[in-house]
Length: 264
Length: 302
Image 1 (spheres, rainbow over the protein chains, first blue to last red):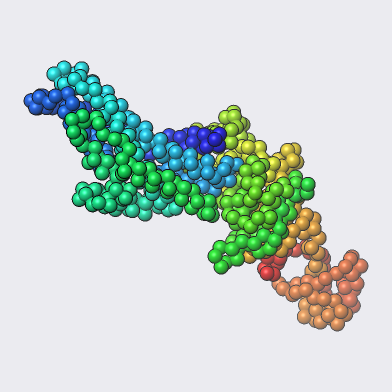
Image 2: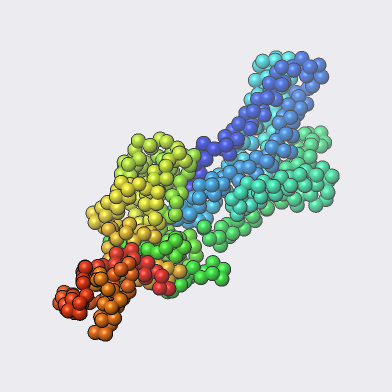
């Protein structure tokens, strides 16, 4: 456990000056910031619709959720999985990493856990910044109705689903970036996968949920409020279980690939 | 307990059908500086990677301080520091951060990093990005990284690559100090014998994956018997005359004849023989083949 911990701290130390790490912070800041700015500068137009609190929150948070879930999340995961492995490919440091007196599983698991925690941090920031910027807008534009509804439950459920839905993609991309040192192969496969995923989810193909890349889109579609209470939807549905299963299975397969791999 | 820091037993290694190492029996005594010599592509780096368990070897073929590397991987690696091929450092981190990162992984206090930067002469460049270091500086940082855990066994793969002459001397002195004062065992690979004959206590010569010589440096020198070099006004006749007397001619080149001899009296007799047969002897004397030529001779034989 100590080996896992030091390897995880080292991952943070190594990548704290890279774009993969900063993207986890900058993406939510930029996206939430620009949406909030839009809601501030276009307040008059938006106020004309007289949205009640819940609908206003829905419109406001939906803007970042849709951009994030449909496009940015898959691509961020693809880029980040590449970046975390590429730091070793680029500097030719796999050999020194694996000649340290640490077990190989700790090194591998720490890398994977670091990638998972970056997605977690990114989505947590999306959640927190959406929530805070809504209340900030309320202070700046008192006519807004953000204060009439507390979106914390519904938002946390949405972002929890997005987080779990990204684990399948992460594990696939993690293995691809582990095997290949170049950018094009994992990026190309990830890009094609994401496009196929979006199409499969949008045409509602019945097996779409088995395509890891389709799961974030399915997740967003299937959590549209149904029935009387919009907060009443489940976090753990079939597609989420499939994503988690992909995540765990491919994480294990990735480790076996690594142990059989000769370090060049 | 045996006295070897590294021992390989009939170690063989293939990449697909290509044999890279065959029946290698390395014996590196504790406390020695073992010069691991061979031309480029001889299998030196592959061997070092096997010793670090980066390339998989069969069980019971590689022993580090008497322990099988496959079954005692972490225990063995704890005692080893290494520099393999070009130094592997994170280009976007500074020299100091590279050391700090390694210290984090190994649970070593960060003050050790400054100590090592000083040791390898990088204190002034400590906060410069390692990607902007010259090759020599990278090599020195690589050595500092290898030394960070204060290992008992150092594996250095061509550590003087890219260093200027003063840098080479510094590394040489550092190796001697580590072995003599701190009883470290050092395996240092090189393709130049001249570079390590001054520091090594033991030599192993490898070519095409096979060990051609292994032993102390003095044993290698003993292999190198001097030849008698003679220059005359008529080398053809001289050679004929000497052959008739049963003296083995090694070779004739550049106007000289080279032949085997036992001691000084042989030199006097050969000189007398030539002079009494009317040959003018311009020069006669013992000439040692330098170790570099000996190395080339050994490696060209297989």
